[in-house]
Amino acid sequence: MPTSQTADVDPPPRLLRRWDIGAPEAASPLAAGPGRRCWRVDAAAGTFFLREYAEPDRRRVLFQHTVTAALDAAGLPVLAPLPARAGRTLVASAGRGYALYPWVGGRGRGGLELTFVQCEALGELLGRLHAALDELTAPVQQSMLVPTPRAADASAAVEEMLRDVPGDGDGTDFDALTGRRLRERRDLLTEFAGHQPPDIEVSTVGHLHGSFHSGHLRYGGSGNVTAVLGWDGLTTGPVAGEVVRSAARLFACDDERGLDLDRVQAFVRGHRSAYPLDAGQIQSAVHRAWWERLCDVAPLRHRYLGEDGTGGRGPASLVAWWSAQLDRTLDAFAAPYTAAYADADDGHAYG
Image 1: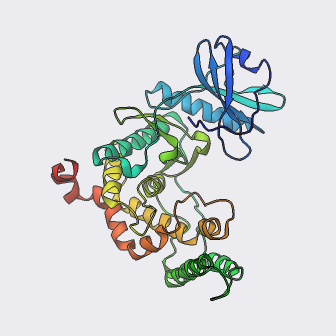
Image 2: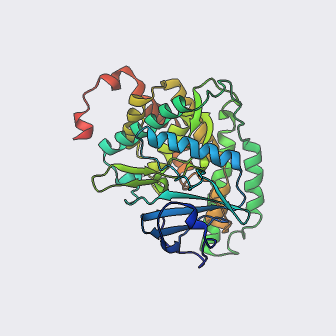
């Protein structure tokens, strides 16, 4: 759980008495996203995590609670909300909603810290989550329209940003770097304009975690995942898309080295063992994930113009590497589905 403090605010008086956790001893505010508040609660029955929903969408929140409770009951490392004395998991007070969870220990670990064996285990965990979500939720329609960003729109946004950057010799070194990065993206958008993926693709769809990355994973001392957090992003979509997006966020370097494709392959191999797709779906998802990053200028706005938001896709520097290595990444992500890879001796990579 996050531990750095935000503004010194307390939950409403008497709220915690609505759960059977004994006498509350302390409620310490924790770091949270914009517009969110949460607390670490120490009580007679133990330590808990209290989160607030400022304007809860009751149907969405209760569906999320139902799903996470079912995943927890299935033995997966997912925290179920604790029912209050009245049996509700979403408790209302002063127009806001609240949910209480067991406190989870452990630490965060970056994807590049994991061994190949741990990468494969993490991919298998995501596959087990996908399989359980299929079993525990209603089927999702198999024909799904996934809108594709347009290169022309992204190019226009880059041109607009360039107008705010001082010209050569008129600004700082950082201004010059900003101009180079923006022109680099504009050139890539022009070069690859003909590589846009289709809006509609035939693929396996289902309920997805929605934000499976290092920030939402907690590890125990033995290196096993003790909790998968971040279920607010619960959504539906192509399963292969979540596999690729997760791998790209987990195993991206912060510089020109791009993606650690050895760890990517271990992760995809693990997912395949629990939720097999096929090489075509994986490659299609790689194509789309690359294109969406290429057309996403939010990280550029954040990094170079100081605007809020990063687009949720990691470092902007990855785009140039991925564009230069597009064929290689298509093959690397799909490698665990090829007969040659599946039949190979794994010892050299996992020793």
